[in-house]
Image 1 (cartoon, helix red, strand yellow):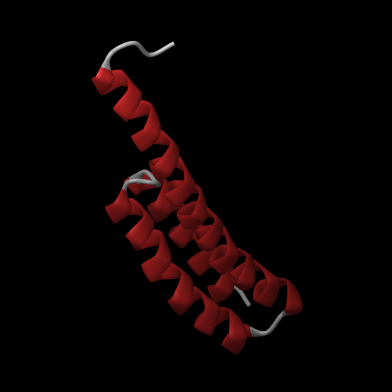
Image 2 (cartoon, rainbow, N blue to C red):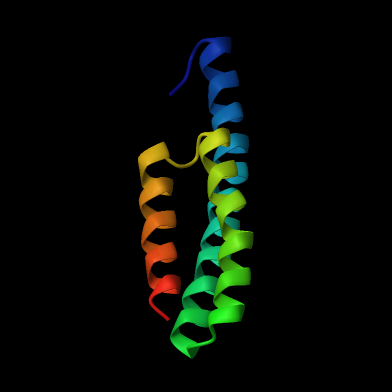
Length: 86
């Protein structure tokens, strides 16, 4: 158990940050799922629009530190390739 004031504060801070980061990741996943649903439906126009909305969300995740840069780049690349193949 944390005994120092700094360690106690770090635990409180980590709990708050974990909640915020969980919400951010959930939001990113929702945008990605919208793209995947449009791809599965075969609607290229909807998929393109959903992809345009998802790309800034992925970039924001990188900027906020919840996603690694290469992970976001890989996801964007794969989604873009799948939308282009429609």
